Amino acid sequence: MKTTLKSAGSTPNQPIIYDVIIAGAGPVGLFLACELGLAGCSVLLLEKAENPHSPLKQRPFGIRGLNAPSVEALHRRGLLQELELHKRLKNPHQNTEPETRRQAGHFAGIPFYEADVDPKQWPYRLPSATATSLLSELAELETVLTRRAEALGVEIRRGLGVTGLEQSEAGVTVQADVHTFAGQWLVGCDGGRSVVRKLGGFEFAGTEPEFTGYTAQVNLADPEKLRPGRNLTPTGMYLQSQPGYLIIQDFDGGTFHTSGQPVTREHVQAVLRRISGTDVTISALHLATTWTDRARQATSYRHGRVLLAGDAAHIHSPLGGQGLNLGLGDALNLGWKLAATLRGQAPAGLLDSYCTERYPIGACVLDWSRAQVALMSPQGRALHAIVRDLLATRDGATYFAGRVWGIGTHYDLGAVHPLAGHSAPNFAFDDGTTLGDLLQDGQGLLLDFEDNASLKTATEAYGGQLKYAARQAQAQLGLSAVLIRPDGVVAWAADEIPDASAFQQAAARWFA
Ligand SMILES: Cc1cc2nc3c(=O)[nH]c(=O)nc-3n(C[C@H](O)[C@H](O)[C@H](O)COP(=O)(O)OP(=O)(O)OC[C@H]3O[C@@H](n4cnc5c(N)ncnc54)[C@H](O)[C@@H]3O)c2cc1C
Image 1 (cartoon, rainbow, N blue to C red):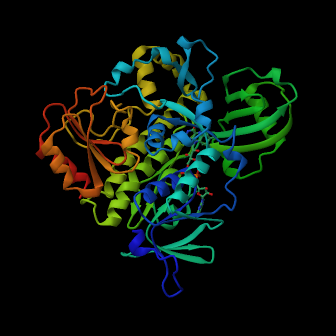
Image 2: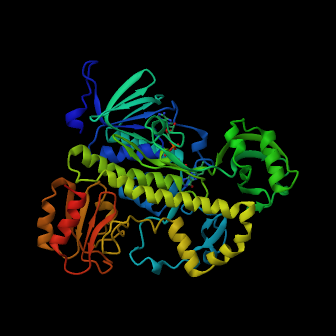
C-alpha cells in the first residue's frame, strides 16, 4: 500500500514498487485506477498515446451508451454528477415518438418500446436516482475519470506504451520504451489489441468476423438518395443517424478491416453505393473508422500477477453497445478484490472470484452480439419478423430491456436469497440520502433496517472493510438487512429477523 511500498524520492538503487501498474488509460484503466486509488493503493497508469484528445473519442464518434450497472457504478462513486453530457442526453435513442412509443433500445436494429416493458418483473428494482441507460462521450468520461484518479494520487504517464513484462512470485517488472517499472501486480487495460495479453501468454478464444463496420463523418452531395433510419439491405445495413454521420455494415467477412487499407472517400462511397443500392455521392470524407464483429475472450483473466480487464479481456461487435459497460463492470469487480489482496485482507479465493464472476458475464455479452450479427446477416433475415413480433410482446420487451439495460446482470453466488448476486436496490432513506451516497467510500456495507444489536456487533469484527448503517428506507422491499460488497453487489440478504451467524458466514466469504 502507499505508505509501505511507494517512495516518491527513490534512487536507481531503490526503485519505486507500485502496488499496481495499469497498462492503458482508456475508460476501463482509468476507472480501475480510481477504484484502487480509493482503496489506498499506489497506482502507476501507463498510456501509450501521448495525447488523450482523439477526435474518435468526441461526439459523434465517441458517443457511448451506458447501461444501468454502469450508470449506477458512476453514481455510487460520485462521478455521475460530474458528467455534463448526461444532463443533456438522457436517453440514447432518438425520441421523436410520442411518450407511449418511446424507443427503449434495440436488438439487431429491431426496436422495443418503454411502454411495453413491465418493471413489475424486477421486484427488487427501485425507482432509481439514475437512468436505466444514458449517453456519454468517451472524451468527457475519460476527463472526469482522469481528474478523479489524479486526485486520488494515481500517477499517469502518457506516451509510454508497455513493450515487455516479466513476472515472478513477488511482482512484475514492466518495460515501457526505455523505462522499467516494478509493481506487485500488472493489469492490462490496453484495449482489444492488448500487448499485455499477448506478452502474458493469455489464450484469446472466439470467432472470426462476418462484416466490416464503418463509422464516417461525410458531406453528401445528394443526401435525399438515402432512406432515413436504419436500413437492412441484401448485402448489409446503413444508417444516417444525423446529417452526414454514417454507420455502415458490409458483410464482407471482415476482409476490408483486416486488410489494414486506408479508409478513403472513394472506398466508403463504393461500399455505401453497393449497400444502399443507390448512386449517392460522398463529396467529402472528414473522418472514418472501421470495426468488425470479431468476438474473442481471454480464457482466463489472470495469469499469476498479471490480470486483464476491459477490451483487453474481450472483444465483440459494438452492436447494442456493451463493451464499455462490460469493461467498467470488470474494473468495479476487480478493484476492491485486488486492494484487499494487497492489504493481506482477502479471504481465500477472493481474487480468483474476479474471473469466476466476470468471465460468464463477458461470454454472455459475446453471444448477445453474435446473435445480433446472425440476425442481421443476409442468411438471418428470415428470423426478423419473428423476433420483431417477440419484441412487441410485454414479456419480450421486458426480457430484452433486462438484457440491454443490464438489469438482469448478476453473479451466481450460490446463495439462497433471490437478491444475492444482484446490484443492491437504490434504497432511498428518510434523511433524503440514497444507498449511492453510502457507497461512495468504496467500503462494504451492512444495511440494517431493524437496528439489530447482534448484527452491529458482528460487523465490528471487520474493521475498516465493512461498515454498519441502521437506516429506515422509504421502500424496504420486505428486507430486514442487506450485506453489500464494495462493488454494490448484494452478498447476503434477510427477509425475517436476521440470523447473525448466517450474516457472519456470508461476510467471511468476502471480508477478512
Ligand atoms: C463504433 C463503436 C461504438 C461503440 N459503442 C458502445 C456503446 O454504445 N456502449 C458500450 O458499452 N461500448 C461501446 N463500444 C465499445 C467501447 O468503446 C469499448 O469497449 C471501450 O472503449 C473499451 O475500453 P477499454 O478502456 O477497455 O479500451 P480502450 O478504450 O481501447 O483503451 C485502451 C487504452 O490503452 C492504450 N494502449 C494500447 N496499447 C497500450 C500499451 N501497450 N501500453 C499502454 N497503453 C496502451 C490505448 O492507447 C488506449 O488509450 C463501442 C465501440 C465502437 C468501436
